[in-house]
Length: 298
Image 1: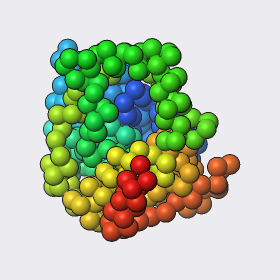
Image 2 (image 1 turned 45 degrees about the vertical axis):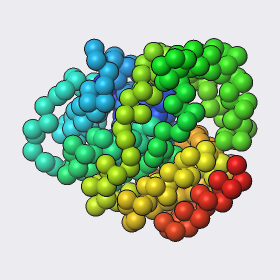
Image 3 (image 1 turned 90 degrees about the vertical axis):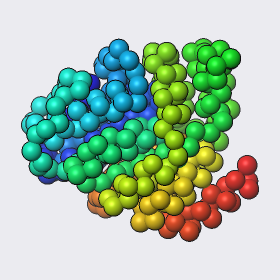
């Protein structure tokens, strides 16, 4: 699995997992805000970007490759630009440093699956706009009878992508495009990931991860399903902190970069960017109330 490295610090290690239709470049905007003492590693998930797909693309094979890559970073972090890890690498090396896993959108779910295997080496989780359940509009694209046609019409077709992006303008800022990345991906792989993520199940399976620090970050204008999901995550992790990025939509890495960087890298000294967005940190009760208000407006 291909992993790009940003920064040369070794005191704090961060590992990013992109979402659906993304690749390692998803996390590039955060590189400019990286503390000198840190390194950010950004992966191409199996079958995405520069990473080849395994012969059998399953939740197990994807999770195994993520675990192998994280272990490689922890055990061999040195000042070089990138690494390539063999699939199913051994994870029997001695315990040393810990790492922060950053999952964007569906990458958040994959980060949790990996953490289940290497919990002792994950010091913190940062989940960006994470879904806690698979809403109906994703399930449509994996339906047996017409899922492939629905997917191809919506995401593999340039006109379909444009229409979809226009219809979702309320879930993004004017400067961002929710479907642009679909123009450069393997659509069979992307549709397969949708099917895999539908197999994960409910949030209850991740209740055992509640002992570690968790930050949940989402855009004020993101999907209602994400806002509802925040309350679901906090129902199993009452200690988790939820951060609302004012004015941002479903692409906080692009739409609220500096504010997100402060949360991810715990850096309060970074200056405001042109968006002048603000961050609101909420409790479990406040998040639930916000989700109810959002659903009432839909």
